[in-house]
Structure formats: structure tokens, C-alpha cells
Amino acid sequence: MHTEYKYEARHDSGYDASEKNAFEYVDYLRLRWRLIAAACVTAAALSLAVSLLLPKRYTATASIVIEPPAGNDVRTATAVSPVYLESLKSYERFADSDTLFAGAVEHFHLAAGGIQALKQQVLKVTKLRDTKILEISATLPQPGLAQQFVEYVAEQTVKLSRSESMATDREMIGEQERQSAEAQQRLSHAQQEWSEYETREPVGALKAQIESEVDLVGRLSQTLIDVRSTIADYAEKTDVNFTSDVPGLRARAAELAKKVAELEKDIDQKSGLASQREAGRQKLEAELKMSQTATETSAARLRDLRATAGMRGERLRVIDPGIVPQHASSPNIPLNMLAALLLTLIALVGYLTVSFSYGRRRAL
Image (cartoon, rainbow, N blue to C red; front, side, top):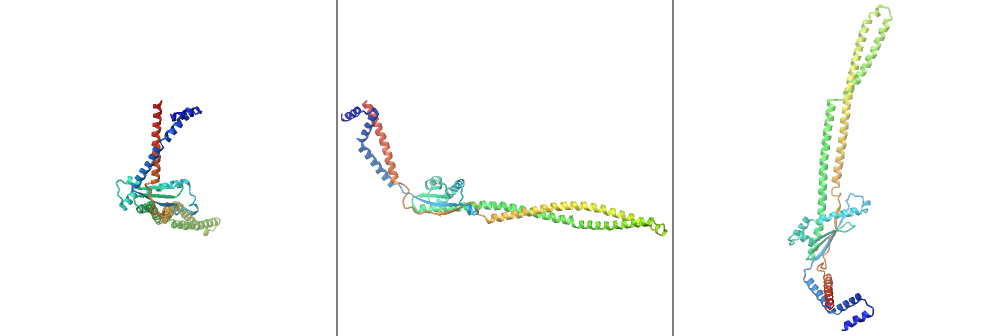
């Protein structure tokens, strides 16, 4: 009767139906505050007891810095783009490798049913956003073991990265060695062809012969001119002593002309042959120079690859092996108690709300 009187008084004072229901609901919860308090205390106590009974687990964290390749200009080392930083997430795969984790489990003699299930419980690898830092966390029941485990995984991650980089370098060097060997073979073949061509078809001796024959043609032509001039002089004379020499001079002139013609023909043939040999010589010389250049370039590339082996990829370095954790990471007692309180409040308020609604419907 007292509660109904208050409701009616509020209604008469100007409260509408919704406000009346709200006040009734608040009064309904207020009258049951002891139940709510008892439930919250019980939930917190149970959460505390369960948290204390749960086995403690400790988390140790190691950090690895991913440095740019050693061959990069130090002036541009700090000019790192967000795209490049995002690409470094691929190094998470090194630390998160199943093979590496299995090796760590075997090294520390951890009891393991399934590697994947255990790895989800123990290992966490994260590349911090917009940084070159790779964080590796390990969660285990013993704090010292957690630190040793995460340090081992970090060191093995660095070794794995280096081994992969060296494997890539060895592959590149092997391919370059093959190309260098092929270039050297081509050079040796070109040098052999050049030597054989110089021996088989010498150009220098042929040019010397041509020069000698040209010189001879010049002398014979001059002699022929002299003989013909003498014949012309004798033809103008009437002395029988001179005219008797003309046939001999004419025969000599004819012989000289024939000899000059033969020499000129031979010179033409030898000049054509010399031109062919010179063209072949120039072709072989060009091929030899190209082979020499290719061999030198390939050898220089091989030297560079060998000199920079292990320095072309990013370099991983452990900058923090982690410390032995002083406090357990789980169970988180304050968080568990808070979660228990919230869940208890939500469940209890829901139950009382349903009970309140059911009671009003029955009253109506």
C-alpha cells in the first residue's frame, strides 16, 4: 500500500507512465541491493580463488632491428618509405617458422603434443608498425625458461635470415660463375679463330706483295715510256743504223706492256683478295673485342658479387634479448576479477529486469 501510494503521488505530481515505470524499476533494484552486492562479492571471490589456482605463466620479449643492406648509402638509410617498412613484415615469417619453433622446443625439451597448438600458446611475433623493430614474445610457466626460449628464437631468427641471404648470394654467384665461364669460352674461341685466320690468310704479306708489284709496275711503265720514246726518235731518223734497232725496241716495248698488264691484273686480283681478308679480319677483330669486353664485364660482376656477399639483403640484429619476467603475465587477477564482476552484474541485472517485467504483467 505504501509503494502504491508513492506511485500515485508521483503520478498526480505530473509523472507520465514511462517515468513511473523507470522509478518503479529503480526502486525494484534498490530494494534488492543486498542480493546484487552478495552476488558481486561471491563472483569476485570465486574469480580470485580460480585465478590463484590457475598455473602462472610468464612472458619474455626480445627485440630485433632490421637494418638496411650494408651497400646502401648511409645518407639515404634514414629516408625509409612506409611501403618499405610495411614490406619488412615478411621477416615475421622467419621468427614464426614452424621449423625454427620445433627446433626451439626440442632444444629446451618442452613437452609438446602438436607444434601448431603449442606455438599459438607460447610464441607471438609482431613487426611494430612504422618501425624496423621485430618483437618476439614467449609465454611459459617458468620465467627463466621464457627468457632463454625467446632469446634462442631471436638468435635463430637472425641466423636463419643470414643463411637465406647467403643462399641467395651463392645462387647469384653460381649463376654469374656460369656466365663468366661461358664468356671465357667465347673469348678463347674468338682468339683461336683470330690466330688461325692470321696464319691461314695473312693480310700483311699480301699487302707487301701488292706494294712490291705496284712499285715494279711503276718502274716497268717508266721503262716502257722510255723505250717508246726511243722508238719515236728512231722513226724520225733516216740512218740505217738506227732503223735497224727499231724492231728490237718494239719487241721489248711489247714485252714490257704485256708484263705491266699481267702485273696490273695480278695487283687487281690480290687487292680484291686483300679486301676480302681485311673484311674478315675486321669481323674477327670486332668479335674478339666484344668477347674481351663481355669477359671483363662478367669477371667484374663476379668480383662485385663475391665482395658484397651477405650485404645485399637486410641485416637482422638482436638489440634486446629480453629479461627474466618478474611478474606473471597470466592469470591477470585484477582483469579476471573485473570481468567476473561485469559478467555477474550483467547477468543479475538481466535476471532482475526479466523478473520485474514478469511481476508487472502478473499485477496487471
